[in-house]
Length: 156
Image (tube, rainbow, N blue to C red; front, side, top):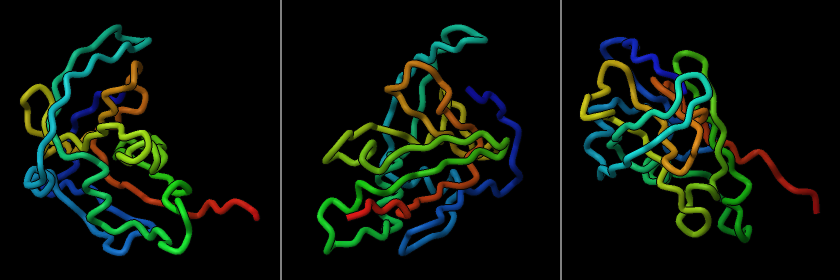
């Protein structure tokens, strides 16, 4: 689990990019305006043992849905081919599938956290939190980009 809370700068922003109708950037302050969800998380880390944290933030699904993923409405279940790549300012990466966060499929409550243990993340940038993960390896601190990619197409 990436623990760095080093500031990304006074205007830390997460860029939403890729196959989206409305790509752009959001600050922690802007993410705070979204409906907030809460998660109590325990990560069993190989190097530092069990860590317990409280996170607050909007659902990744809500934020990306508002950005307009380029699903093809003519293709049944087109959204299942989309991947989500999340990158932290420290270079840490994680990959999720759209189906993992979509309420019609996995429905995982993945957060773009704006607080950790009641501490605001305005300067450090948002954090990716997957409460269902036992290990914190997909926890990304200081997210600087979330890229949606619908490039995978199965052969007919």
